[in-house]
Image (cartoon, rainbow, N blue to C red; front, side, top):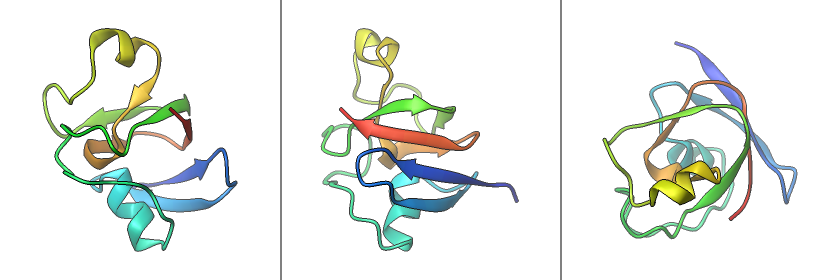
Length: 90
């Protein structure tokens, strides 16, 4: 099962996430604090900016507008890594 390195741009913290594990859950498993609430892609509490890398969502359309997606905003609670990624503040 592939794993990817996740880097939090602001803090410099890094952790590994399996390709079948939402980024938020991998952060929690690694002891990296990340704000969250609903954990299903609707509340937007966990929103970050994808600075580098690729993700795939576990749901068809998470709680982001088309424009926000185009700007690189992501919801880690429903995002599966598809490469090493860097997350910055929204």
